[in-house]
Structures are given as structure tokens and as C-alpha cells.
Image (cartoon, rainbow, N blue to C red; front, side, top):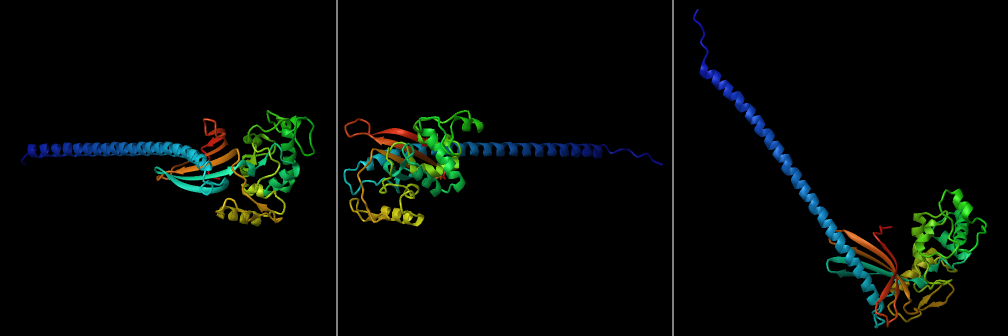
Length: 309
């Protein structure tokens, strides 16, 4: 039998094919890695671009909202009464560069002063914003105990001992509320309830009654004979009135409501929205300075980054 002689050419060909297969696999893996790297870089670059755009639009919205405050003051001081903005909570819309502004102003005379409000009115306000009947008297007592100068506990009220029993590291001020946000520290108060009460309250008016020409919905509800329906109809008629000097608005008792000029203290809310839908909201309380002073207004309260309620 003849011996079989290996074919060197065939062996070399198989070896080359194996090496080529390995090289192809390596090349494919390299391509996959390059693709992943490039993709990751693209995603990272896009994310950074979006973040930069969001930061830029957020900054623009913030400064546009600040401009809205200045615009509100300017229009409150308009010497032409027919063009002067009315501080009764109605919304004025305008464009500032690329930002869409929504501006509302409320004269603090239309609000209830938490430092002088009486017990019955305070109870009516709490009921009007939906506080349960069994929680009204304890909240009224705690608020009045916070602002009165003594340590005597009212019925259903709260002084040092009650705050200590609730594991709170503080007690009542036993003095006037300095800022409205201080109301959140009162025993039994929470943020959700505070936000409901906030539109109706102030620490600046020093008035025992509200001026219905400017009062927000929540404050109107404490007035005699006022109901949810009557209050909303009154606001709708008030905002539709063009003549600032007429007396066509009537209270439930038949008395007429007339505008009484611009008060010294205003709350202004400005929402600035960019085309990208990024927005910023500012809520400020200002004191309008007398005409001879250099500054147009003074900031009394400033809140930014306010979320939609």
C-alpha cells in the first residue's frame, strides 16, 4: 500500500482560514466597541446639551419673572386710570422677549390680617377652605394663643406645654406673626392647609375687615351672606368691569362696592414660561414707595421656585 503524503498547500490553506476567522471576530468586536463608545458619547453630548439648554431657559425665565414684577409696579402707577392695572387677582398676560408672562396682583387691603382677625372670622375662614368641624376650634385657639402676649391656654388652644407634648422644639411666639409663613409653625397647621389659607391672609393690612373690591375668593367667603356661588359671580363681575369708578358691584346686603385707589402694599405673582415650556414663578409682596423716594418699591416678602398648586 502506498503511503499518503500530506498536502502542505492544503494544510497552509486551513491555517490561514482559521487565522482569518479569528481576525474577523476581533474586527467585529472592535466595531461593536467603537459603536458603543460613539453612541455613549452622542447620548452624553445630547444630555449635556439638553441640561445646558434647560439651565439657560431656566435662567431666562427667572429674569423674565423679575421683569414682570417691575412691569406690574409700572402699570399700577399708570397715571391714566383707564389703563392702570387692577390689583384684584385678575391675570394680565404679555410677552417679554421670548417669555410668556402671566401676572396677577392683589391689594393687601383685600386680605385678612392674621394679627387682628377675630375668632369668629378666623373660624369662618377655616371652614371656608374645608377644615373639618372638629379641627376648627383647636386651630383657632392655637393661632390666637400664638399671637397673644400671655401664657394662659385658651379653650382648645396651645401654649408651651401643648407644643412640648407634640415633641416640637419650640412654643408659641406670644406676639404678632412677623411673616405669614410663620403660621406653618402653629400647632395643628400643615403645609397643604397653609397654602389654602395663604391667598386670604396678610400681616401688612392691619385691617379687621377685607375690602371686597380686591378680596380673593377665600377672603370673600367670610363676609356676611356670602356663599361659594355668590363669591365666584362677584369675582367674575369685578374682573369684567371696565370703568374703574362705577359702583355697579353689589354685596349680598345690597351695598355698593367702589374702587378706592392703589393701596400701599401689594402681592404680585408672576409666571414666566419659555417656548421650551420651562417656567419660573415668583410670588412677592411689595410696599409701594411714596413718589418722592428714589426706589419704586420695597420687597417685603419673596418666594421663588413656587410649584403649581
